[in-house]
Image 1 (cartoon, rainbow, N blue to C red):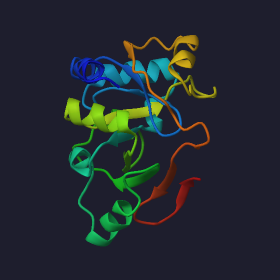
Image 2: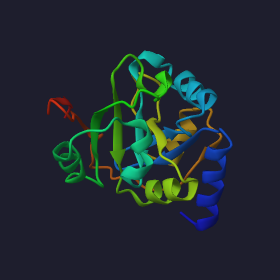
Image 3: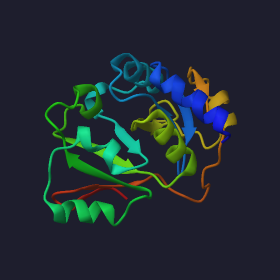
Image 4: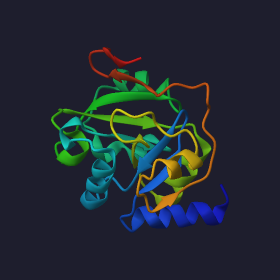
Length: 183
């Protein structure tokens, strides 16, 4: 991604717009996590109920810190061993974390990504991003910018980039119990 494209996408995020962007395995739909209207637009695109919650993706844990509750160092170390990478952890949520991010859960799904586009976007925007697969519920996720266009997802911008076509969506693990939610 060119520096211009990155600044443009980051500006869209800061302006409350919805973008599609490459992650490790699939294209994601993203926006600023604290923009309720943008999150509502993503849920509408996906035809997904708010009660299910969403994943936040970041370039560094410091961008996720405002959304998670304090946990013991051994739990942090467990997550840090898998980051950056395609591992999503369910952390206890910070009580101030909005319902539109956590849904009906007392946890929030977070990931520090190794994908260079995600790293650049989050660093340039200065924030974590909402990250949910670029598709309507029960459909296959987009794995290219072209597939995002074909799926007519009504996003404000599609960021070009590659996904690892052999990769699977991230593993999701509950941090405190160690229970695998998605393998």
